[in-house]
Image 1 (spheres, rainbow, N blue to C red):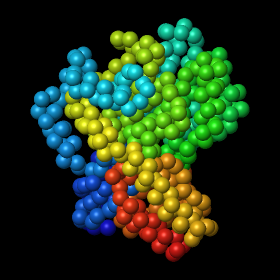
Image 2: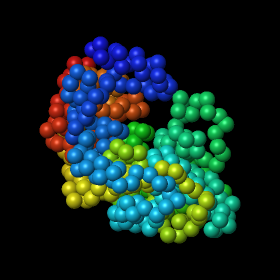
Image 3: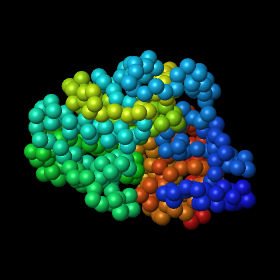
Image 4: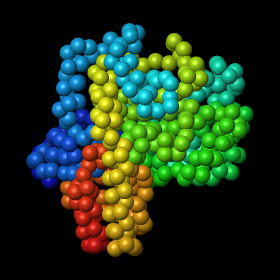
Length: 400
């Protein structure tokens, strides 16, 4: 590594809280599906800022919208009506069956808002003492205290933060009986990801989802879908729940919504929207002029360029290429999984040296659960880039 990298690493260590296990890479600029380090070395980006920059990096059209809006109005708070926010709401709601939206700043904040809305709706609208939220093992919903508690993972993520908030129950993944047994008179909602990203790129089986929907209806409880990572064309549909024919009572969005600017959203039905009223929930920065204008342009591009279809076809191609590698390395690859370009390759060997080898070959991806290579590239990724990744992985596995 260069002296430039050593200097920036030393500087970071002296200035920032040590909360990240950073990759051994300092990014100086990015364009389209490429990252560049301090020495100008080029990397193919299969991470996209953790499923954020779905349209690619440093797009001129988004920069133009950002600059134009910044010259007119950046921030006045949500005490005022703002047309860019309404334009975004219309476009976002046109992609789904939701009726209302609340804009936030991040996925964790959106999920926190969804939890608050579910509880308040039960208390204030239905007059029922229901507050418990059921989530699934290995789920990930955020790092605020409530969303951290909702997250179905143990280990360092929760270590040292006790006492965690009450009102959350986690059940084993795929176990309908356990889910049924967890429902009681205090249950307000079941909260799920259609594909568990941090949990190892695990899609929920269709039959399991149908059972969850049926349990919600039978027991008069709500369905919350966390679409923070899966939404906005990532899985081959605009929203992942559309693969399953499900209409959530509440669902959330963030990551790709403003292609790198901090933004989240809580979407819900008209009925659920009754749970909020002036003073019950708010945010200072959510839905400001610049982020709303950029997010509206993001949705325009996704629809015009049919990036849901693009993600679907690239996901099929990636799966086919990964299957070829599995056939060649049956003792080292379990197989691919996921939907669209939320794509995972499960390894049968320790993933750390494989991930490191990929980075050395200028391929940036994520390793989750120790053995899952998680690929969430820009939706504009090409077959050539996917083939290059698979060739690099083939070389690494052949050398093990």
